[in-house]
Length: 294
Image 1: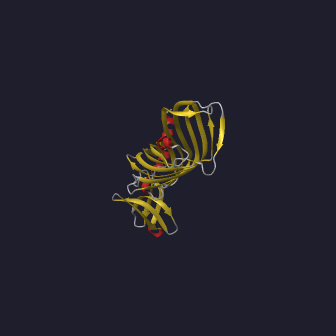
Image 2: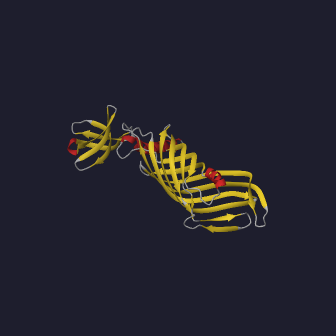
Image 3: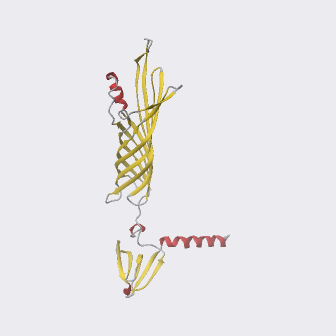
C-alpha cells in the first residue's frame, strides 16, 4: 500500500508541476531568466518575466541566447493572467432579474370608453427574467433566455351583458395575462478599466406565447396564441465581488399575434386576425437583478 501511495503521489506531482512550471532562458552572458516563453521564432525568442514586481513582455535575439528549457522551474513568477494569450475572464454568466413592464400597443378604438381605463391598467405589469450565457471570447457570448410578463385586472359586479332575448345579467370582468418568451441570445459585453463592471447588450429571437385567462359575467374565457418574438436589451452590471454583480437593464420585446384560440371550457374556436387588428405584444421592461459570473 505504501508503494502504491508513493507512486500515486509521484504521478500527481508530475502532472501538477507543468501547470505551475515556468521556463528558463540562459543568455550568452550567463544570466538565467525565470520566465514564460510565449513564442520561439527563427530570429527571436518572445517571453514574459517579472522584473521588480513589474510584469514585462519582451524578446531576445537568438544569437544572445545560449540555452533555454521549457518547464524548468517548478514555481511560477508570472501569474497566468499576465501571459499574452492566456487572459483570464469569466466565461459563464447567469442572470436573474425582475421589474416593471409596459406594453406599448395602443388601446383598440373598438373598446367602449367606459372600459379604456380598465384596459390601460392591463398594459402595465411585472416580469421576471432568467438567462444563461457562455462567453467564447471576453466580449461575445451565446446563451438562452426565459422571460415572463404578468398582468391582471378585475371589475367586480359592475359589468352586465344583455342577451338576445332581452334579459340582462350582471357580474365580473377579469383578465389574467401571461406572455412568455424563450429563445437563444447573442451577447456582447465591454469591461471597464478595472475589469469589475461592464456594459452588456443582448439580442434574441425565439418563441413567444400569449395566454389570457379571464371571463365576462358568468362566461369564462381562455385566450391562447403564439408567435415569433424578438428581444433586445442594454444594461450595466456593477461588480459586488469576484463572482457576483448587481445589474440594471432596459429591454424591448416585440411580437404580433396573427390568430388565437378562445375557449369557454366547453367549446374552442380559432380567430384569425386581419392586417389592421393584429394583437401587438411589444413591451418595455425595466429590470434589476443579480448576476453570477464564473
